[in-house]
Length: 435
Image (cartoon, rainbow, N blue to C red; front, side, top):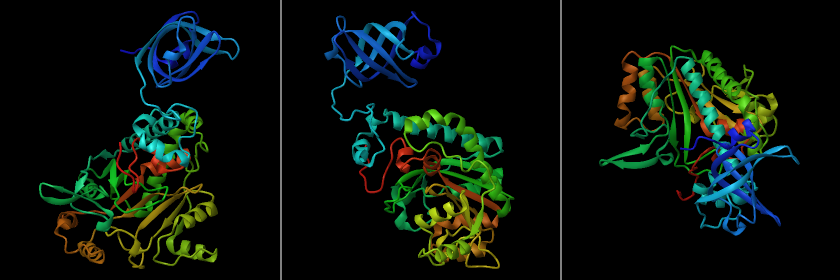
């Protein structure tokens, strides 16, 4: 079992000690007398100095896995730690030519390499930029779990196969299980609404699926959702809850972000959401403001990416768009009593052009209101929603929910060019599922 990592050697600086390291060759350079191998593992990189009289340079190439034994030395020219090799053993050879190779110095996020990197994702997951993005994902999801658990939320593992959809059927991905036509989940909120009446505060982090085509930098066919429900929580108070979640994530992740951002080669870490409260503008006010500034948007239309960017720039902060139009929101969300054209919903728009990252909503309690909304969406004759309606007939309470895109959040915080970069194996619109 491997017990010594490259970061251990660099940290300890045990000059003249012998060490055995296991890792991969990221690059090779050869001079008249020496071969220099850059050895990497999951923790870092170190230079291996090899005498060409002892080691034949033609035998070694990028991406081979090797075992190195040698003496730890200090390179006086640049004050770095390296290893003078006494033995090299090739553990795994390389028989596939990739150019550029996964660990070579190129921009893996450059659009000209997108197809190449995606088609070889099983190999390019070892690319330093891809690794950095996945480390960012690890940190962010850890911070999310920590916040929910510190604040008394119970994690509910909701199903992926479901007979009910939040949106229209053309946005769902169908499956047939035991002769029953079902869908891959779009929203586990249905199931969290059941659990919230037991545990009062519940959350789920899991996959969602979208069948509708989109070329947006914010959409994938398969993506991950942070979903939560909270009982006995007035809508106006739920804003503060979610703002604290965002602020806490940033506070926990930022101290570890510098090294990740350096490897990502993007715009650095964005902490614009560190200090709530965030400004709020109603949907009506947003439509009016956009119209006055030359944007073609009318009441009842979704605000597009360009409009969202204008609003975030206008407020110089993440901004809430509140009380969205009834016709563009899902059926489970409560209608505002004195303004039935809008709902108790809100979207949080991120800064720097990254758009909507989450939405919150007050969930309908009244069974007749829910039936009206189901009819508006053409779902009233579907018996599969029967159990969801029953929740309104068995001691329902006021409850609010949030849905936040994991990849959208990571993309914003680490300034990634596309949400696909925040996924280990992204499933993109119109792309064959491979690997």
